[in-house]
Amino acid sequence: MRREKEKKEMRYIIIDGNNLIHKVAGLKKLFDGDKMASGRTLLESVKSRLSRGDKLKIVFDGFGNYADSSVIFSGKKTADEIIRQFIEENYNKNQITVVSSDMEVFRLAKACGCDAKKSEEFWKENTVIKKKIVKTTNTDESEKPSGISRKDFEEFKNLFK
Image (cartoon, rainbow, N blue to C red; front, side):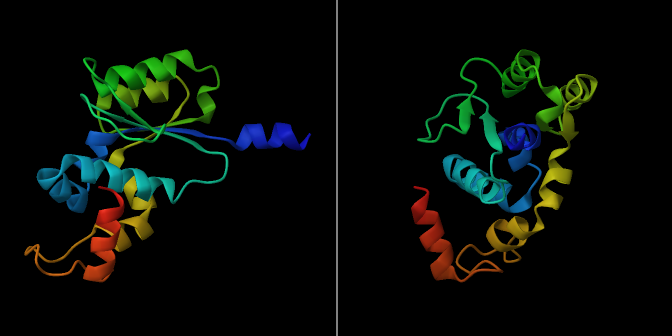
């Protein structure tokens, strides 16, 4: 009985990575300077907020390489195509949360019975991440970001090189 309950509570969260990055000012700024660093920051930010048993997939357009099974690069396809395929191939659509502000993907997820969240909405729900990791108030990169010390920021940044 307990196993059945755990299975019902497990979620698959699939995120359109570039779409979410471009909706968050701090991640977008990081993306403009270092695309891979912005992706790693997004990955670690979201992973730190997952519930036990949640399965995460972040889909990025194009080619790349992370040593993490939660990240998928779409290669010659688009991230939208990979997300559509994931929705279509999974039976328990009510356990899938799709994060994208792309209206075609969003509507498909809703129509299939998935929980669909726009990127901005998903990020707002994760305000701790937003405030502590990527939100900056300074425009000069030599200044320390708000929320964490410069030393902590550099340490965090070095972890994801």
